[in-house]
View 1 (cartoon, helix red, strand yellow):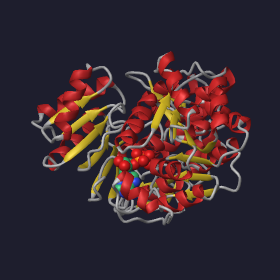
View 2: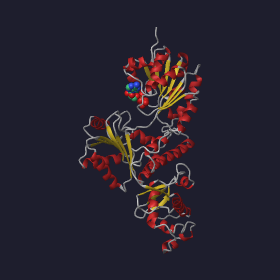
View 3: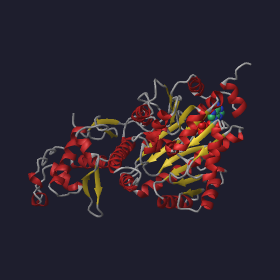
View 4: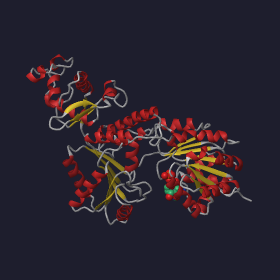
Length: 534
Ligand code: ADP
C-alpha cells in the first residue's frame, strides 16, 4: 500500500492545500527521528509541524504546553478534525485524569497535551513509558530559558522526563522568541542532539515602523488623535500600559468623535466580549487596550497599532505591533515615546513578583527584565533603521536601511555626542556620590563653571566635573540632558523643581557596555549648531 505523505495529511485532516514556509522541512526531520528547534513568529503555523508527524509516526506524541486555555483550544480543534487528542492538566478532575491515562495506556490517543508539571507525575511517566512516546513536542519552548519572556522552572525538568523514558524520542522545540541567548538555552536545556534549527524570518515587510516623541501628555494626546483621525476609515489598536490610561485615552478619542472602544482586565467578562466583538465586526474602529487584548484574536484587517506607552520589551512590542497587517496589506506601527513611560515601566517591573522563583532567580530575572527594558528604550531613541534594530534584536541579519521606517524616511544630520554625554552623566554621578541632587539648570551651571552663588554655596565648584564644558552653549547642554533623559540614562523626578538622577542604565552607559557601546548619535536638523564641535 503506498505510504501516505505529509502533504496528504495536511489536506485530508487539516484541509489546507499547501505547506507554509519551513513546515514541510520540519515535518520531514521529525519523521526521520531528528530533533528540531523551530523559531517561527506567532501565527506562522507551528502546531502542524508536530501534529502531522504525530499522526504519521503512530504511537503517542506528548506536547508540553504552558497554558491550559491554549491546550483546550488545540485539543478542541484537533478533535473536530477527527484526531484523537486529549489534555492532562490541573483543570481536570481525578476521574477525567484517570480516563485520559487509560486512553493513553490503551494506545487510543495520538496526542496528549500536558502542562510541564504533569511530567513529574509518576503515574504519567509509567503510562508514557509503557505505551511508547514517539515524539515529544515542547511548545512555547522559550519558557525553559531565564532569558525568555516567560520563564517557568518546571520547563527545566522536561529533560528529566525524557531521560526517564526507556527510549529517547525525538524532541521538537517550538518558540516565537528568537534571541540567540534563548535559542542556545533551549537547545542546551533539552539536550537537543544536532537538531535541525529553523529560524523563520521575523521580517514583516508590509509593516512600517515609526517612533514619535511628543513632549508631554497633551502633545501625546494630540498626536494620537490626529493620527487616528487621518485613518478614521481604518481599524487600529491603541495599546496602553495601564487600565487607567486605557480609560482616559478611549474617552479622549470618543470626545473627538472617533469610534473607539476599550478592553482591559478590569472590565466585566460581558463587556470585554461585547467590546471585542464591536471591534472585530468593525462597529468600532479603534480598540484601546492593555496587553490583555490580542492573544488569540485573529482580525486580519488591523491597519495600525499605536503604542501609547512603552512596552516592557521589544518582544512584547513586536508581538503587539505585529497584530497589524495580518492580511499582508500595508499597515503602520507607531510608538509614542515619552521618558515618563520609562518610570511607569520600571514600576510595573518592580511589581511583577514571581513567587515560583528563588530569591536568586528573581534577582537575576529582574536584572534581565531591566536590560530588556533598556533595549526597548533604545529602540525608541535610536537614529538607526527601526526595522533593522528589531530584526537584529531577534538575532537576524538585516540591512541598515529599510526605506519604510521613520528613521529611514527622515533626513537629519547626525553628530557624535558621546564624549559630551559621558561628561554630563559623570557630573550627575559626582553630585549623587556626595549625597546631593541638582536640577538640569544647576548641572549645566556646574559643567560650564558658573560662579553663581548657589553653585558655590553648595560646594559644586569643587566637583571634578566643574567647568569641564565651559565652551559648550547652555542651550546645547540642556538639549543633551533632555536627550539622556529620553534615552533612559538620566532620570528627572520631583514636581516643581525636578532633579536629575542616574537610572539603572547609567552605570552601563558610563562603562560603555552594550547597548551603550555604540556612539551616542544625536539628530540635528540641518543648520543647527553641532553638539560636539569637530
Ligand atoms: P503558531 O503556533 O505558529 O502561532 P498556529 O499553529 O496556531 O500558529 O497556526 C496559525 C493558524 O494558521 C492556524 O489557524 C492554523 O490552522 C493555520 N495554518 C497552519 N498551517 C497552515 C497551512 N499550511 N495553510 C493554511 N493555514 C495554516
